[in-house]
Amino acid sequence: MNNEVRPPLPPFTRETAMQKVRMAEDAWNSRDPERVALAYTIDSQWRNRAEFPCGREAIIQFLQRKWVREQEYRLIKELWAYENNRIAVRFAYEWHDDAGDWFRSYGNENWEFDESGLMQKRFASINDLPIKESERKFRWPQGRRPDDHPGLSELGL
Image (cartoon, rainbow, N blue to C red):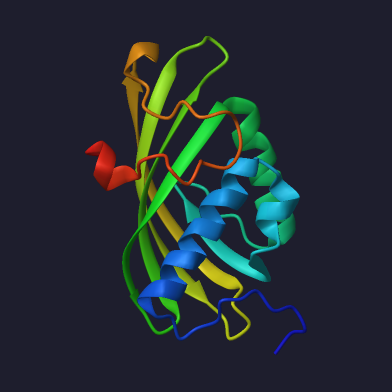
């Protein structure tokens, strides 16, 4: 066991799984690759679309590239299922590219955690839907989603 601990720890309850999901959402909304990477094991294995970053350094580099391309990124994650040391989430995020074209990206993630609460595996499937700026639903100031902002189910997404 490594000396890094990232509570809550598995096995997850509904409450601790929901807490883990919100912590991940908050970190990703920071758009800080180093902060996000701390939630993953040193040798964490990912599949993100058609990329397969492995390890924290590769994750940091991946996220740096991602947030250069995906501007004004805002994300909502929602717990789908959990069991023992695994959590499944669905998510949506909105962003625009350099040309100012807006997208809503929808996806599912499967997460597996080690005994220290660090994510050792992350498998993400994501689809991008072009949207008009007027169709955006995620309009909070950049950063953490406010507690009173609706989640995916409440928004009908």
